Amino acid sequence: MFWGLIMEPNKRYSQLVERSFHLSMASLDVTGANDQPVQVMLCYENRNYLLCTLKKGTIFQVPLDLNFQEGTKIAFTCNGFGHVHLTGYLTLDEDLDFGDLEEEEEEDEEEAPQLVKPKRKAVESPAATKASKKLKKQANDDEDSSEDDDDDLDMDAAAAAAESDSDDEDQTKLVEADDDEEESEDDDSDDEDEDDDSEDEAEPEQQVAKSNKKKQKQQAQNQAGKKQEKQKLVNGKDSSKLDLSKQKKNKSEQQQQQQQQQQNSQQTKRRTIEGGVLVEDLVVGNGAPAKPGRAVTVYYTGRLKNGKKFDETRQGDGFKFQLGKGEVIKGWDVGISGMKIGGKRRLTIPAAMGYGNKGSPPVIPGNSTLIFDVELKKVH
Image (tube, rainbow, N blue to C red; front, side):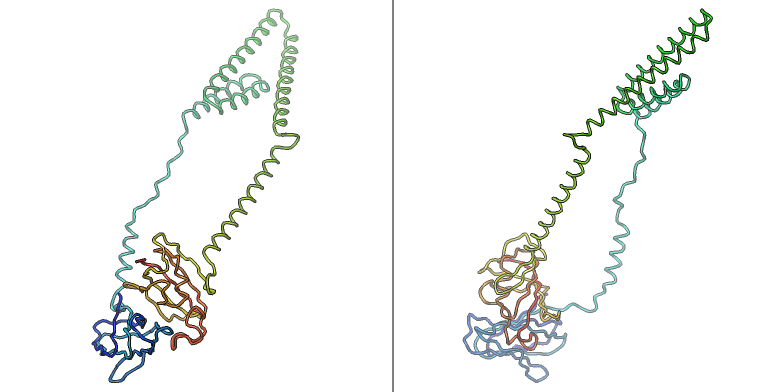
């Protein structure tokens, strides 16, 4: 929760701390200040301590890191000409028990409904059962008839039955009709042989007929194989090899496009702008953009290059200032410009765009590179 105090010059502000708070920043209101320095003092246990010295045009804002506990008696004063804004935030109670929250979350997880539906068992379709019954029937008929001729017919009928139900019925009828004709021919030949009493002559005729049928089927298979080989060849080249080369080419093009997109996205997310400020968009917002001259409100965390945190505002109303008006360091004015509400951005600010050679003692040494994680909350 936000904490703030606006001090008029040469006035004393005494208080008994009712709730513990953290003092983060002292800022000079440049609109009513002159060129004389303004000192901010803290009175604690009957002794005065100098917190910071502010001056229009040079040092108008100083980060602080002070914690005041509940029940402490303190007083703030400032001399010179100009109003001083002290800002910070209230600290959380240490008595808050987070164990209850964790237990409630675990109970919610146990009561979460199951989102995965049970899998259904595969059921054989009526068409498949019908085709399988026909195949079994044809197989039984083929075992009773000749082995060589009827096995080939069964394979043809099975392939036709797998394609469609209508083709299955037509082809099975044709096969059965052919079988009936062959059986009738065989019966007729047997009857004639019995009438003539020449069993020795009937056997060679059947063997000749079987050999002729085998030759015809073999020729048909050879012709089908030649057609398949012709289909594979396209302009004298193997179509399968052409397909593989096309697939490899498409994959390489896709990989190049993905790499290019990744490079473009990295360049847009991380870039160097005016004054050598490095900008890295962690989250791109979708609200109104921050433009120079507009008032903006942000949450932020400031760290040195070694990772030490020197300032933070992550609660309450946040930190509000006019963008591009010199109310903050130059690195903020150029680095926050262009952000959208809801966006998060990391700013790596060199010393020249921050607090320069002098720094901001005792928190920020001279020639310090500053790293800020900034979240844009509002654009006014």
